[in-house]
Image 1 (cartoon, rainbow, N blue to C red):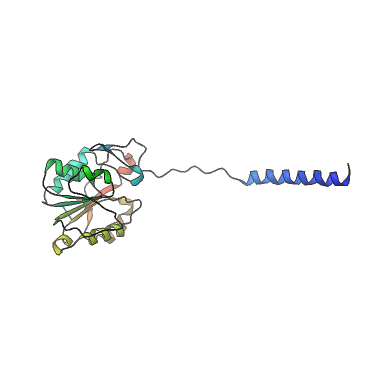
Image 2: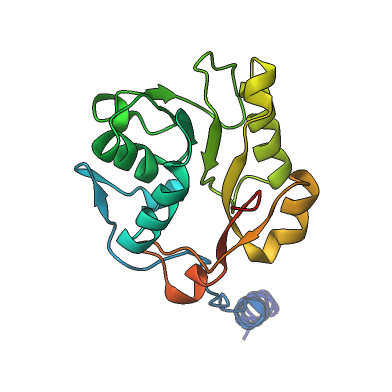
Length: 209
């Protein structure tokens, strides 16, 4: 073998060894849980299917009844990110309410619907006397929820309205720092398509009922 051919063969061999070494260094991806709240099929409300990508989940019947019992002690509720309660109020009570929500599919379903972004709150003129919030808590902090609740208020009466929040108890300390007058109320909340172990962590917070 000539020296030129030998050098060429040596170069090819080095290249092959380098490729093999590189392949050995590449580690396969580690499989981790995706952190989703559910693997169940989306539930529907008023023919609107849950959008799990937006952390949209509807209450089960037991929780809806429980929260409506609280809501009925007020006259003019405002529901933030909470179409479950807004639809139940309009169906069962029938008096005026407001739903602030980003899901435009509810625009033609709920009379009191107003398009809303939690991070871009605006003042609401509706004279609400209570607020119920079920925020996408994996992506929105308690401080952001508090800011939204504060900034929608246009009057002293609105600012004095009690606020009830569905939130993950894993972040309870942060929530109670933002909503100082709140406490955990009763048993965990139930949702139609959330995994049981996740549901067990979701509670209602607010002033004592």
